[in-house]
Length: 431
Image (cartoon, rainbow, N blue to C red; front, side, top):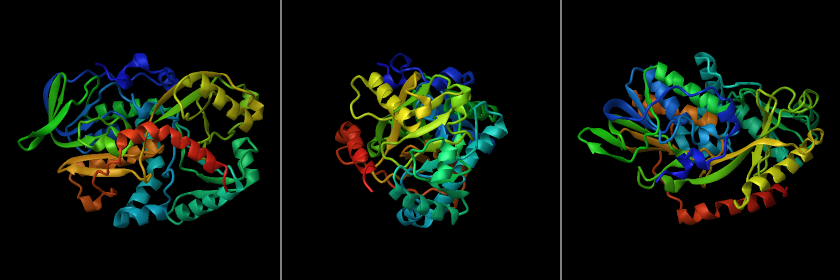
């Protein structure tokens, strides 16, 4: 039976699928092949790992169950954010110890890595690196902004506070009370970026096989054997790059992350006179709320936003109404918008909001828990996995390795996860 998350008939069409360049030509795996590195999953982590490993001279094979960028990498909002969602630098260092500062440096530079790759390889990804803004939805959240600016600035990031007037000018709205910005962030067409990474990896020598789900993984002598319906890869090293779409290929991996459905939507093209009053400098924006407000434009003048729902029943009409009303409240000049595209995908969320990075066995790396920061973070982690596959010693990697930490009563946690939105909304109203 076809996995519904890999079946185009079950998934609503996205703006990105309608506007991204076509993917490079790929075929399912047929027969047995050998590789230095086998990557499972053709999203940002896997494609970044494949590109960087191939550039280092490794023979790389990528297995993808559906198509390039089919999962979260092609379904997100396309904001490139060089932070974690709730963990700030001091928190990261306190949580992971000696690898804390190297990890913070990796995150600090992660957005620049994305845009550098796009420029270097000429990817048609609608890339705009004009900065990312996190405005404060309550005056009390300005303390959070001040803390983040202080901690990131101390580590060399171009972070700066914005007062209320400057925030209103940059966002085009009086809704927020100030905030902060990081100028290395920005926005992309996320599926265009994934397809661009795939094309660059193939040019570098990697082989990418779509419609080739990894069905089993076991040792065969000194190599790992990863079997698909049509063939098998024998590899010295493996990267499992499936995150929120993880299955039972590696026992227990999927139980440390909860796949949370995120709804994305794009308006009809906004008229030029209104367009100039909303995010006039082209920033990407996501604010301080748990029930997140987030906005950016695409290359054709569509405002791209979205949100979350506690109950999936009747999801499309309900998310259109909810986010339409929200957009009109934040941007009165827009009115209640018409949405031409509404789609969804999964975000991998874990309990401590830190990425969990593993060496599951000698030569087998994986991670879970993007927590809504996957574009830049996954690209950077993928590069580190490539360095590991190339023989860089563990102590020289910016990766705090840890054992798999299953979430207690995982199946129940998955079912109850949407209800947590009620708690987030309550907290959003508190000082």
